[in-house]
Length: 395
Image (cartoon, rainbow, N blue to C red):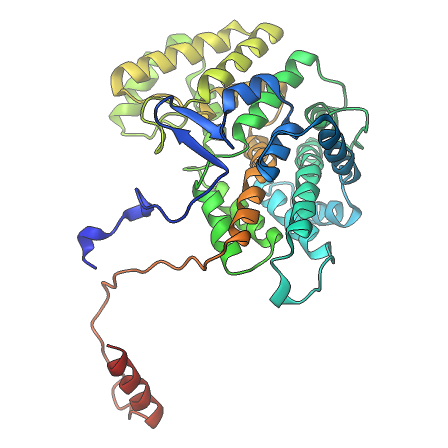
């Protein structure tokens, strides 16, 4: 293999097949199991989309009711998980909180044989583990924000659907339907996106026949990076730095002269703009009207228009979701954990798909370090000579 064949970042490399999602180049639409995500966001609950990702089809009324009943069993914050979170400093990043909580849930799950040789789990076990994490993460994320604000844990409510209960546990009051709808749409839009960095991390870990919780924990670590999930936080920091629409031109002049990376714009997969953005922008617009914040719309539109005009690079999903989450009342540090709560559905779908037709993911590399060298005075042993002989035979 020559250096010219190296694909840095695995750009353009196809490593496997998947039936979970794709971007249709003809329509520029992100498809979940064949359904355009904008149609799902406009018509479905997040529970129904989770079922679709895990099972391949949208649920019947009975199947959806069964999933909702199962999810409600795991909504509460388990005592050992709360205790682990409480041991962390308040200054710890919420992503570290979530990563730790998932690891504790995994260590507490004693289903299966308990042997490392059977860590991957059966399809039935992994589906149940997926539901458990999906149900538990709202409590983890909500409690993380509340404890940083000096507030007490709020118990879940069984009479609310997933999105409404998430907001209830975070803010301690029932959200208006327009807010629940916007939040539900955002969760659907963030749920899945093929072999992105965190999903690929989960699949690599799964390919070793490790367990689902370890794979999700690794995915959270990948999502923490600002080039992946952390971008929605960065968008809000940019908005706060600019301050208002009238400051956009001067701010952008300076940012571009300093060659700063403007987070919230650009995507490796989409060449004609992120297909999820229009749907999330509609949700943001409803929140702007609900909270009477036209200043947010002015800043959003001015920055987008000027940046696209100058660079020809379009917004990605993080651009509208950042200000939307801010309007709802989430702290900026909570934005990426919200991404976890949504993407855990896609991660676990990929984990189960990888397990079903597994091959260890182990790419090659080209060595460019020093040539072979030896420790002065070292005398080769019989084992050394035997190993060298075997290598020569292999060549």
